[in-house]
Image 1 (tube, rainbow, N blue to C red):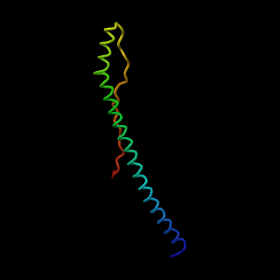
Image 2 (tube, helix red, strand yellow):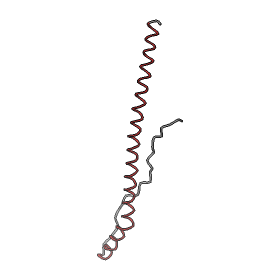
Image 3 (cartoon, rainbow, N blue to C red):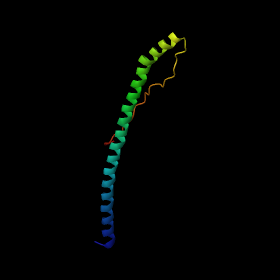
Image 4 (cartoon, rainbow, N blue to C red):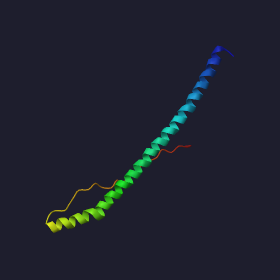
Length: 93
């Protein structure tokens, strides 16, 4: 084997080692990224539940008190968030 061939072989091994390490790091990143997405989904669900509760229970009661007091009982409330959080899919494709 010539010196040049030995260096090429060494470079191939180094590239392979680095590729394996990069793949491991990428998979760890995807797990963390998808965990963030799951937390955002839970937060979105909680937010939407709070909006629904306010619209169904809290605001109607507040309007009744406002009417009794002769005041305007309208309040501005954020809309529910309908967007879904996407997940990175790892696999063939």
